[in-house]
Image (cartoon, rainbow, N blue to C red; front, top):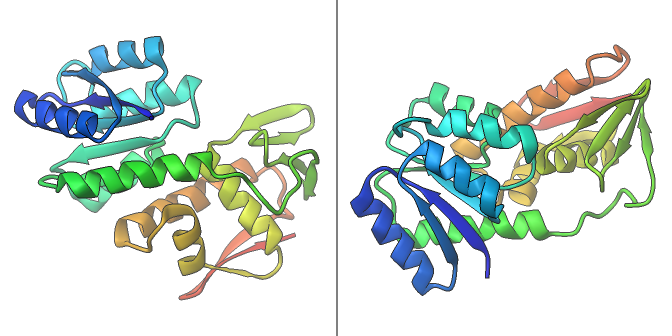
Length: 227
């Protein structure tokens, strides 16, 4: 079963969540602040991180920034009472994968954890794992989650690589927003929609050194990768 790193400074909530996950077969590593959580992450390399945003010593957003410097793939879920759109967007921009507002049900938490773990483990399809494909002047390796241009490599997160793969497979055609949300995020909720917008922005930045490439919004429908 998967190993969950739970970082929550509210000890009562933290112990309830830890015990509930343990009963359901997860191995749970628990830390009460961001610094301790980061140390546990570096030592144990868990399968998923579930972290509060507002924590002493190191907040959840700063924790995510540090994790993403060395590990672009591990799923990170935020638990927080903060629900402003700007906070949600910032969390996704920094590399978070999901956002669960307090108070939450333990059943929903477990469903979301399992969904993130399944998406990470799912095999890629469409673009051959053994081959590079050319996107303008870039070379894209979906299996290695890497873009290359003029000898410079850009390492992508799993979600970035999957989204770019979908755009490439539908190149010069519309990639429907709802379809990609259901495929990669599991549902088309508002928060996941904002996450998709953030990842589209990230891909545009990664591809900005070739002006012939465009990812355009098709209003009310989705996105189109134009080559």
